[in-house]
Structure formats: structure tokens, C-alpha cells
Image (tube, rainbow, N blue to C red; front, side, top):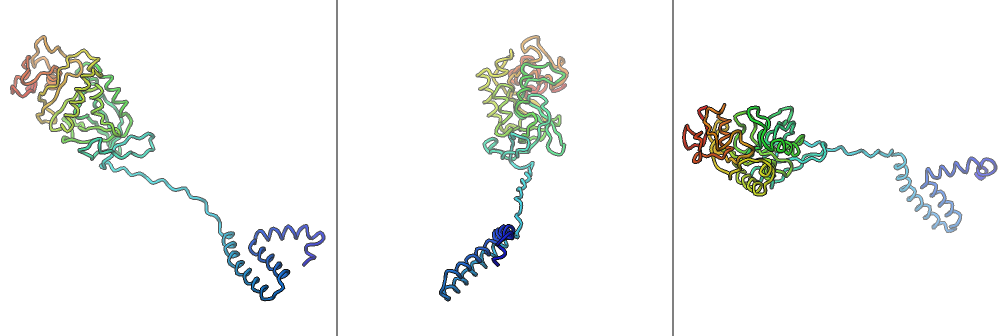
Amino acid sequence: MKQLFTGKKKLITIPLAILLGLAFLPFAIAVLLVWLVNKKVSNKKTRYASFATIGLFTLFFGSAWVVAMSSPSKPTQQKEQPTVQVDQNVSQATKPIEPETSPTVFKAQTAPNNPNLALAKVVAVIDGDTIDVDLGEGNVKRVRYIGVDTPESVDPKQPVQCFSKEATAKNKELVENEIVGLEKDVSETDRYGRLLRYVYMGDLFINHVLVSEGYASAISYPPDVKYQDKLREAEQQARTSYKGLWGSCKTATPMPTTSTSTTNNNTSTGTTTGSGACKYSCTSPDRDCSDFSSHDEAQAFFNCCGFTAQNDPMKLDAVGVGDGIACENI
């Protein structure tokens, strides 16, 4: 045995023995301990007891060593990110920071009386109070904001009104290319087929923001009057502070009055505030229904001037006097 580790052979056998010892470390340690016990312990009982103890430890640790060396390490697998499923009917709104960010949960304080919102992607901003949205799978619908009216900018029958461009720009700033929450009141659509909705961007109530910052006036058509008082109050504060159109447009801005109008084929009461410049002078010359091309045009003028069923100096409410509907016979 000694001959293996003498002479030139030791240049091969010693490194090989070291490698084998490292590869089978528990067994190499056991052999070394057995050799030491055999050399140093003279008492036979003690020697045999030591051999037995070394054997048990070698069997235990050797088995574990062999298993560990023979089992290939498994690469760490990256956890797959769960796919977020968005239910269009679940109460939630969104305010994503990045496109891949999942929608945030709609907070109840935003619309406390109706948590049932539908998510939609804004694909176009038409003007200050109208947008086109994708409800999913390419189902694009036009949405008219409930309870607000911004100065006209896209109606070919009317001139571009004061502060209309600013209102459109503000609406774009708030919702363009974003995912918004849509809340229905009572009516599904208006007579033009547009969805009637309150619109939310995260915790922002967009209808309210436009009114409170002076980009829109409050106007309500029953039965869609859920937030009528809130919007009226916001407009009053904007008027008092001369915000937006109230400080920039030279137009008569009487206090909110109540008149009636027709929407969705139902007669309804509308709060008008004279937003934007009226098409004609509200004082002279005197106008009659023949000066207007449609009931809508006459009603818009009637509302803009703050006329009511009780205050109708131009007698535009000639048919059904007292109902506040202008030129309903056109």
C-alpha cells in the first residue's frame, strides 16, 4: 500500500487520493478516524465501540452526501404573473400610470349612491362634454356627459362659442386615451342615440370637474338628476370666483333658472345658465319662432337668455304657454 505513495507514483496517486477524498468526504473522514482509533486506542472494547460509532455516522452522513451529489439542482422558475380579468359590470374605475398597470379599484366615495360602473376606453374627445368610447371588442359608442353643458364648438348650425376650445382641451387633458368609469342615471341614451353617463377618471368626477373649474355650466334634464344639486353648487362657486368662461366670456350670466325642454322624447326641466355667447341678442330685436330653423335652436336661445315660462319677453313659448318649451310647433 505504501508503495503507491512513494517514488514517482506519488505524483499521480496523492492528487487522485485527495480528489477521491473530497468526492467521498464522509467516507474519507471515516477511514481516517478508523486509522487513528486503530493506532491510538489499545483497549479492544473501546476500539470496537469507536468503530461502531464511526460506522453509524458514516452510514447516515454518507447516504445524505450521496443523495445530495446525485440530485441535479433545479433552476429557479420565475413565477408567472396572474392575468387580470376585468369585469365590465364590476364597480371599479381606473387611473393607470402605465398601459400595463391593472385598473385600480373604484373607490366608493367617488359615486356613493351607485357603485355599478362600466369600464371603457376613450378613443376620441369630440368636445367639452362628448366623447367616443370603446366598451370592449371594438364596440364604440358616443357618450354625452349628464348634467353639464359646455360652449358649442362642433355644431355646424351654431358659431363657435366663447371658451369652447378651452373646454374641449380640458376634456382631452382629463380623459383622452384613458380608461374611464361610466355611471348610468335613469336614461340609457338621448334622442340622438348617445349614451348618457356620468364619467369618472380614478377618483375624479369629470362632470363635476368641468363645472367647478368653469369649463361648463350645470344643466339638468329629469329624470337624470342624481347629482343635480352638487353640479349646481359647483357652478355657483365657479361663477362667484369668475372661473373659466364666467370670467372670460362677455355674456349675460343670470342666476340659474328653471325652464323645461325635451330630451329622450320626454318633457323635462332644465337648469340653464347662459353658458357661452347667445346666438342672438337677448334684448333686441324681438325674435319669433320663424327666426329659428328648429325647435332645438329656439330652445337653446331661450335657455341661453335665461327665459322661463314666467319670463318670456319674446313670446317664444307661444304654444302651451307656461311650459317653458320654446317654439315646440317647429
